[in-house]
Length: 338
Image (cartoon, rainbow, N blue to C red; front, side, top):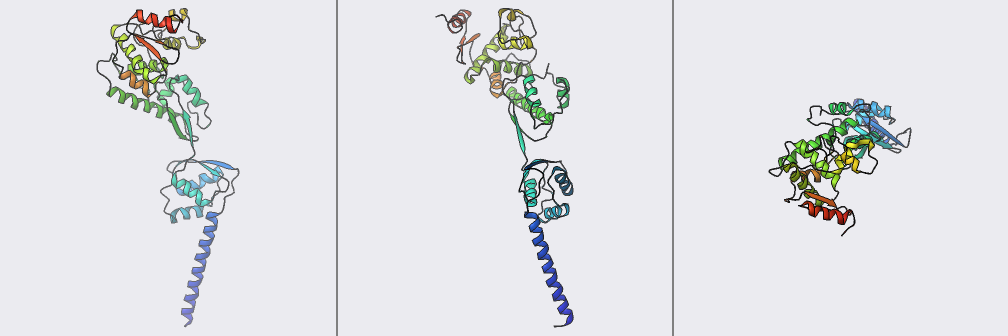
């Protein structure tokens, strides 16, 4: 074998050995647990970050991947365009390869907030304000400023009450509370729009907002699903003939902080914009956050001529067409008289 051939062969062997060594070294690095500063580390990857930008954010967050090797591994695996933004949780023992896979899969650390049907907007704000996983960008905003922040400042609503759909919302840890409000607002607009489009004919509501207000009254009047369409019918029947709605939850809402848990005769006589005993028609805004069932009931009430209802005390109600029948139901179920 000539000297040249021997040199080429030797060079090839060296190159193969170096490649194998590099591959072994890369595999060792990629599968070796990283030294995290704590048992669990949270890192937020910003949208539209480059691969090298991702490594910098990981390092600042306490996940010390070697930038050049991480970039090389990402490119060798063809994942450079698949890394997703969001908040990620990394635990002790995680390797660079596992970090990369987590980012490529978008396995974000999601948190949750649940908004309950029947809550007021004030209660919803308190719940979001107390959620430690959210970034509280609305702190210090009044309701009008919050509506402007989510792009709802042109809403015909009299207030923020009732404009947000009660549901469970997932979000990346550290996300802005503005995003949750915006999603809940858009969800309510979507649900209300769909219900309005499929509404029964002849309803005494001039707009979806009036229907939303009725839905909030239904939400507060009963928790029994089967009663909601009949409660809706009573409200619609009364509105058609100009009869006061006489719904206690609206009166309570109008009393505000002065309500002490007991509704008295003098409260029913105290005139406020929400006193449906002293004023005819609908209150000026919803009084709570209605759920899907109440929206559906408001826009598709039961086919009944009832004008009255009273609670049986077990969560259900009894409905009457005449005042005489209603008074007898009140005697039986409220006053305990047969």
